[in-house]
Image (cartoon, rainbow, N blue to C red; front, side, top):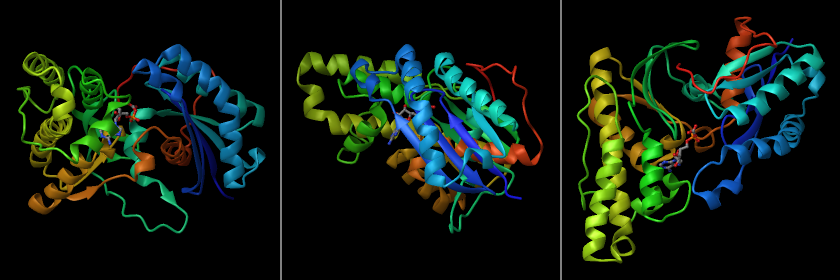
Length: 339
Ligand code: KG4
């Protein structure tokens, strides 16, 4: 008998549902919330209200695209955390209610682990090259910057992480200071392609071990910009491409420096990247350069699976299903959690 998992993701500002049958992705529907653009960041209350409106049509669409009837589902997997509590509660409550009404198991999924396991999403007739255990994964998103040693589907160890801002958060904040739109990551990426990455230098952190820090870079960017604007009030407009390219290059250097150290320390050459910032062109290029220079075998996710999506929740749920790793209905959502 087939195993069909419905995955539900609602940790931040994307409502998403996906269906996976015997490990193969049949559908992945994502509804992003444009309402936050006007505020330059996600407004938690607006996010949870939008999830409430979106969740039923998104799940309906995912089942329809997959040509799966809800009575055929084997289990419902959902993001339990970390994320915004109001947003999580919508997905968690919906998933539990649906699983209970269908009398099938429910599976709680750690959103961070799911980002890592996005590398195991397999589409129909697709011949994917998947990482083999153990491998390293650089998880970089709006809320996290971590180097993870992935020993198995459900066994991961965080080797290093940011002690303050995440990489995506720092990029978004610098972009906001420049008066660019939200989220800043894709805008900085686009501008950076036309700029000189060596035009400006910004502070890099000196943090021990394999941890990261991005708050110093953000401050250095802000103070430098203030000084330059004093000289030329139109400085940003005149130099936005070079600013974006230099900012991106600094973030990528910081990320790759520690990742290289981790690869050397743990003698691992299989290196993956995951999370929203893994969509970044500069970071992807740096991965390719490292593959050539250090003989790494690299794993870069498809663009659809870099940002929040339910396909990664469904595949994580699928692996947990195989271990009979289910949860009970009284399990609460959690806003903060480690891997
Ligand atoms: O994983 P994600 O969708 O959400 C969570 O934080 O969980 O990541 C969002 C982050 C944002 O900071 C966004 O600006 C960044 O990913 N991002 C990018 C790019 N696309 C998205 N950063 C740099 N370059 C990009 N192309």
